[in-house]
Amino acid sequence: MTRFVWLWAFAALPLPLIFYLLLPRAKSRAGKALKIPFYNELSGFCETSSRKNAKGIKILAAAAWILLVAAAARPQWIGEPLSLPISGRDLLLAVDISGSMKARDMEINGESVDRLTAIKKIAGEFIKKREGDRIGLILFGSRAYLQAPLSLDRKTVNQLLQESIIGIAGEKTAIGDALGLSVKRLHERPGKRKVLILLTDGANTSGTIEPLKAAELAKTDKVAIYTIGIGAERMVVNSFFGNRVVNPSADLDEATLEKIAQLTGGRYFRARDSADLGKIYALIDQLEPVKSENNSLRPVHELFPWPLGSALLLAFIVLGIKSRD
Image (cartoon, rainbow, N blue to C red):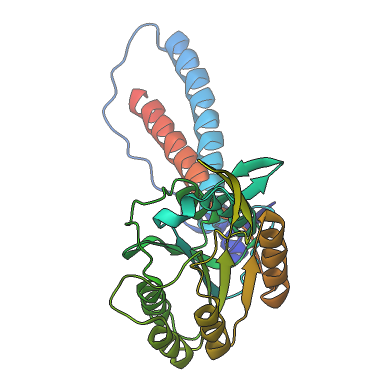
C-alpha cells in the first residue's frame, strides 16, 4: 500500500491561489510601440496565441505545484509483512574430518557411504530447519579451523559443510583444539544462548588443548555441548583369510565425550548408523527448539523522487514556453 508520512504538507496546496487573490496586481509598464499597417490582424493572432500559452502555463504550473507538494508529503510504498523468527541462539557445529571418517560403515537409502557423507546428509537437513539461529561451522582433523563464522545465512553454512573433504585438516583428531576454538568464537557473543554440537569418531590424538580442559572453559562461558560419537560397532571386512567381523569404532573415546557433555550441561549421543544420527538431530531440535517470536518487518520504499522529478520536468517545460513568448 501507499502512504504519505507528512500529510500536513498538503495544507500548502492552496498557497498559490491565496497569494494570487491577496497580493496586489503588478502595474503594467507603458513603453514605446511600433506601429505597423496590419496591426489588427497581427493583434488578433497574438492575443489568441498568448491566451492559449497562458492557459497551458497555468495548467502545467498547477500540476507542477501539486506534484511538488506531494513529494514534500513524503510518499512511501509499504510492502507485505515479512516474518523474522529470531531465537537469539548461537549454534556451532564442530565436525571431524580426520582420516578415520573414511570408514564406510554408514548407509543412506541402502547405499554404503563414509561417515562424513552421512553427516553431510543429516546435518544439512538439520541446518535447514534452524531458522532464526546463528549457525557456524568448525572443521577439525590434526588441527581445527573456522570454516564458517556464526551467521543467519544457513544456505552458505550448509554449502560449506557439503564442500568439506576428509583429511584436508590432517589425519589425526584434535578434539580439544576444536572445543577451544568453538568456545573462543562463542565467547565473542555474550548474552546469547550458546550451543556446540561436536561430531567425532575417535579420540583426542592431536592438538595442544586437552578436551576436558576445553570443556571447563565452555562451562565457565555457559556453552552447552552436545557430543555425538559416530561409527558402527560391527562391520564385515574382506581379508586374505576370508570375511571377518571388526569393530570400526574401537578408537572412539566415549568416556571423554560423555564427561564433556555432562560438564557443560549437554548430552552425549551414540550414532551407529544414519538412522541414529537423524534421531539425534531430531532430539536436539526438541532440546533446543527454534523460538518463533512472530517479529515482522514491512519493507519501505521511498517514492518522493518520482513526483519531485515530474515537478521539475514540468517546471522546465513552463520555462521553455515562456522563453519563446
